[in-house]
Length: 455
Image (cartoon, rainbow, N blue to C red; front, side, top):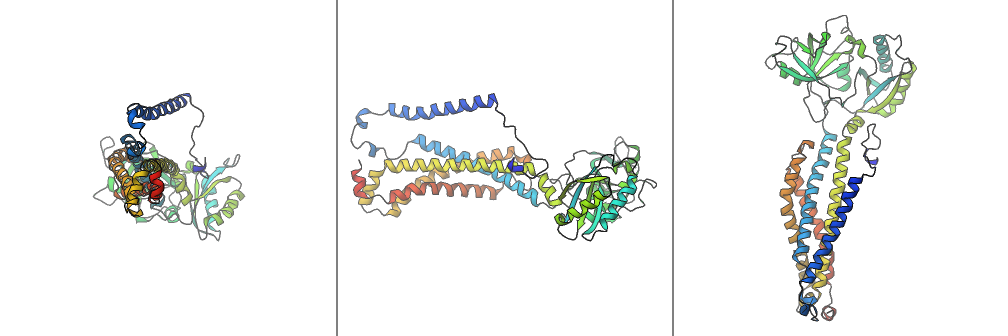
């Protein structure tokens, strides 16, 4: 669909006809039509025939009834509820797009790899990965290059328990952490600072003791009162992860959840786990626009005869893809809020036009007695403003209550954000006054002679 066009994981909707939805829609349409038709019929049945037959009966009505005003106030209140919710979802999307991911996304290219037929057959993956990374790193457009078994930001939600080796395996402090297997130079390529200890090197292979680099949040949770570098931890239940020496401490980065700045992460050297060197993603920090270097890098990958660059994207594009659901939600919420705003303005316009029509004789008399056009304009707009402000006053509590229902979907903005409330109220009031201005302006230009003869 258009709202998620260009993304590898588009959001789709099932638009096939549904009998239940159709029946509910038809029933609501019929009931609404009957209800709207009953109101004027009920009002007409209660009028005195003698008053209706009087020549000046129309001029004595003096505006619109309470039912019409009530409907408009209700419509304004409901429109405000939708505007408040839509505003919060739009700001959430904007916050997620602009959030600092903890790594440098500019000039960063991520290339997902896929094997050619029998591409990995009889392959020494450590030797091949080293050859691939060396070949790419020698390109003039490349500043640095690395490899991982995943892309980032990743949508993978798998977590496992990490704990200190010195703690009791059953009762000790455990932290649920994500994991990533990365090549040497990964932190330099992504721009994630290693604040203590060291990065992985070529000596961190399967012939040496198993090591790990951990994120700052994980180190703080497991070793709050001591330096984490040099400590030993265990992760999950696999034997090779039961005694890992921490050799480095990396800054927190939003690699697995853009909403969480401190997701605990354990990084393993890919050379110590050769079984995980198949598939994966190549990360390239370029000296020029990543899009321009992508084609050259792709040819270098294919020239080795083992893999295809199945997906080539910049880090910024991947971040946009990660928030595609929020994007679609924001667009839909904005659409329905705009539709509600349009309906409210049409309703106010119709109401005020109806009121002006019924008050034509009254307005003519006012003008004949010396009222200026500004006074007539003010009288009509005052009624519009009163109805709008009453609807806003009713809609604010409802909007705040409904905003709490979507609090779990929000990011970087509070459900009772004052600026969002103020913006929605001012927007709704401006649209309402504009809708009332047209009939008010028409009323201010009434010729008193014509108005007095109209009835």
